[in-house]
Image 1 (cartoon, rainbow, N blue to C red):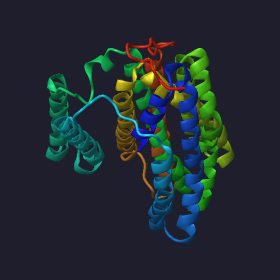
Image 2 (image 1 turned 90 degrees about the vertical axis):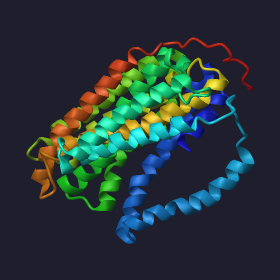
Image 3 (image 1 turned 45 degrees about the vertical axis):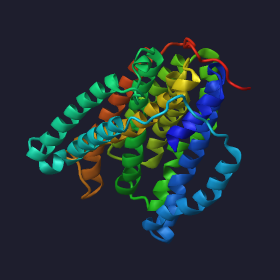
Image 4 (image 1 turned 30 degrees about the horizontal axis):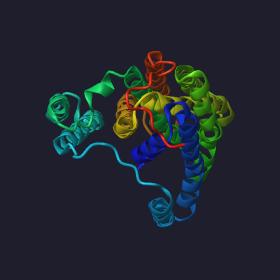
Length: 353
């Protein structure tokens, strides 16, 4: 769903107007992110956490008819699916995530973990070889020759390490570190999620007007600084929620600027035939980068902290967030290679107004 939403919006607008459209898309996404923690807290407190999953049922019943009635169909130029490539990519991702998440439990030198990591590397090599031979590859080589595509995706990985790490650890910080209820933790996270709905469209507009690189790099730097602020605040002996709010807000503003600029950098200058695959790769790396980053952060946390009490949790939380800030900062470094104004590739014209 995420990949196709990005594809439909990206294909509907020419490069010079994509940033604003993608900003609106990210802003609407921000509305869901803003409402989710509070609504999840209410459901968890009143009914039970299992009922969170039922929320998707009425949403689907309402949205599916709207999509069928309103959203126009969009097709790329490919005529076949690279099924072997899909299998190799999925198997490699599974092996890598499994190895990282099992490292602290089974042992990093265990046969299980080492076998998974070796299998992930072998499957990655097999995927690359398959892409070089496939008639309709999932990842065409011409995309890898586009600087905005490569750098924008690397920056996306750095950003979503922070997003996934924040969702996972910040809620626990409020619940375990500060003793908030599920509802209180959900409402407390709104300081971290609030800016995306308001500033997502602004980030996209800036990407159109001044180029992708400035809002992307500045946004990732702010996200890293906000994460570092939260780590430093959590190291204080008299931690309070008020101490965390500035870090939450700075990180939220940074993510709001960076997210649409990163998507626009990946799609910038591409023609309609490439937008779908580029959006699919970007959406995959959002999720995969976030999952792998979270697995790495959990691997940092597990030997240093725990859940016996607030002090035990904070002992692991502080260094984990320091690592998260460093990984996000690496995303900002990658963003420096994003072209400020992407060159429009051959065939990138012809959008309907």
